[in-house]
Image 1: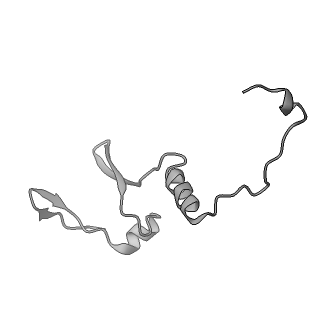
Image 2: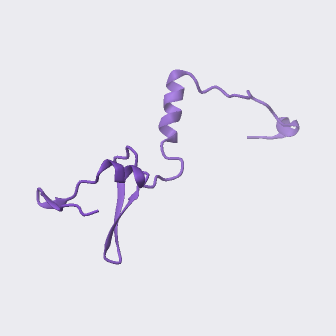
Image 3: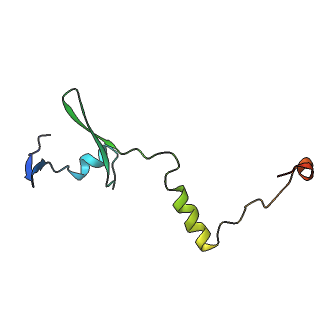
Length: 84
């Protein structure tokens, strides 16, 4: 597919058709990784670090009071002998 490269302020840009983004698996993504490889501009879905967003999700659960233990507290036989 041929696309036009258009002026965009001091830069240039292209419009990526929605079907092309969907076909590449971008869905409603708002961020992408852009690199140049062997003279080609490559656009990939942005990678998120493992467990990103977990802290915020835990805070949200805590604010809602929905952070209680599922299995409850349980101990081991030798716990009484441990010193902390």
